[in-house]
Length: 213
View (spheres, rainbow, N blue to C red):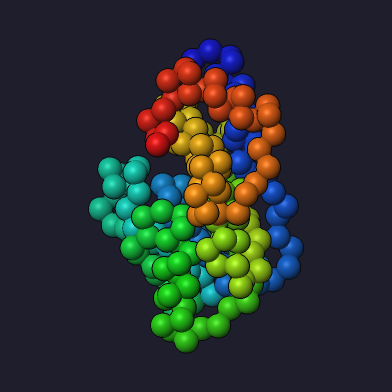
């Protein structure tokens, strides 16, 4: 892998993970499923810090987890939270979502079924999901005041060499969705700087198109 590809991957990673970490408490933590087990660890830490009194772990099987796990992401993440010391009764599991929009719509339906009213939430997700998750939340569940928390870690430390090809493909797919999903009305529009979009196009030309639709 050449230096240009790594540089472009870092541009996209830094853009997608850029946000302001939340400091105010919320009504609940919404933990978005993925293959990243650092996500439920961070959720457990925020719960312990009393940032919210309730955790919802949301996720079915995704494009990566269907190959590596035999349980839905929501279940795997909930078990990790319990392992980290979160009381089981403080966790709800949503195990059917197969995309980011469904993380919000199905969680909203779950909380309504449970009779739980929320006005604010903190999204917890893998780093390069931060910007798209927040844009999706603001479109799909606008009644809630949303913030997002991720583990602040540079690309070089977050992704191992053996997983780098796969993760670049995933990030390129997510980068495309930042534009096309806003155009389709699935999320609110987000400004994409020219240098970020240029990095995306170079990676597409380099063949990182596995998750480009």
